[in-house]
Picture (cartoon, helix red, strand yellow):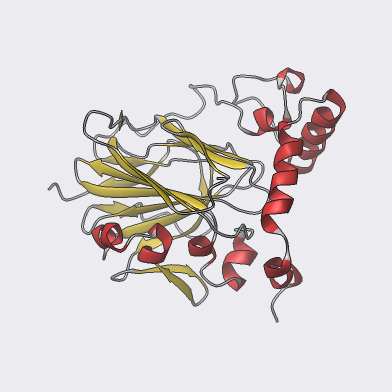
Length: 285
């Protein structure tokens, strides 16, 4: 039997709930800010030892607390030239190979790279490649960093629902990542194409990147592309900040065929820290 929460999610006003939560998270009214920060800190046992700001009172809003910056010394970035650094703090939801265009979600559920990316031509670059689905819980660090050196070629905003993306939802909601609001970034790397998909979820106030600023929510409510000409492309070094979630969600990595291999010790449920080695690049172009 399907659990109650996944069963009722299709009937929830996802965007309304998330925008209300987002407004509260951005409020600088001191009593509300303190209440939210203290309650969440206590419930999730959030400690600030690894962060630049270590006093909860110094955050101007709950969202500033939630997107707090790491102390640069707290997360060493994999320094191997061929190493792939974890882009987030979180947990492995799933990882493995893409079967032609098919990506494993959980327990008999699958979705296509084309549906996730919302672009048939761009999805073809990842056929028979690799994927990793990385879940960010509320207590995690919520900025997203580059796993390898790469040049940003394009961004796509894809409107959609805002289902929860926790393990229970992934197991019971069909194609949840390909149905939710998301931002898809395509990079060119020394070893081949790489996509990083920032997936929205229930109570996610917004998704932003350093290139475009806040992208989601979008008043346009339609798929929007940004393709960067050579003179406007940005090259990111491994470990550079690329974007952030205002509240939490999931990042999905996609790579081209024969481009990388994931670390053998990683599996569903593995705990992750930004910068740690999660694999290595293999065959050069």
